[in-house]
Image (cartoon, rainbow, N blue to C red; front, top):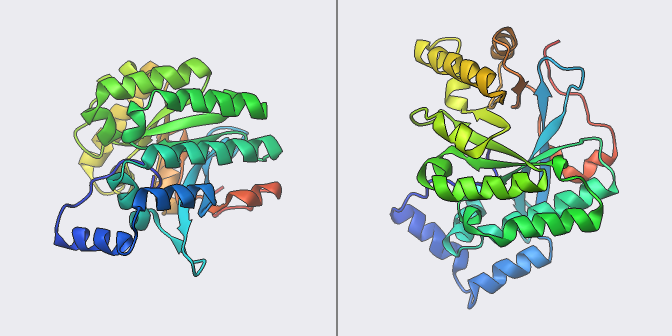
Length: 280
């Protein structure tokens, strides 16, 4: 999570003041954002996802986006995504991310597959799948190297658009994952409608499986449905080794979080992926 994905924007006084501060003095904010993308003023990181029952320890990694300020400091997503969202620029960012990730894959990468978050706005972009196909073809990269994450909130609020998006990218050979699953009421129908490959279990469930009966019941239901539908489960926000051990015992297929592996700059993939704090 924590990337270029849909989120709730609090429409309150503090948020509006922050928005005004972001665009203060800009005569054309949209053009400024386009220039930031054109000048590569964003930086990509990757966070490996651990396979809990496979010889291939890190079969994929999630792509995370940060923005560079003039002082070269890296801004977290919460500082710049609201501005992009406000001006309808999220599809531009999502296309930029795809292009940069495909370039990395074409140059060679020790990570064979990346998951890329897509915003709710991007679900309505019919040209997005075409962009993905063109970038893959030009670079000679297999579409199976990309898996697109759609936030559960966007799936529930825009099921038709999410289904069209999923069908389009799956026709290319890419994968689909629902992110933050179970954060709200658990709805299993979208898993079948979107024909998802993976479900990312929301961190609120993962963090509480050792002490909450409700969290354990939700996870148990997910495991049973995932088994029937042949869907992989990724537990996000894994920061505790006891939780990681419990996930293994429950046969959850994958885990992600700072207790598994910290994020690293995408360009560092030219070197071997450093070992993470993983329980063996």
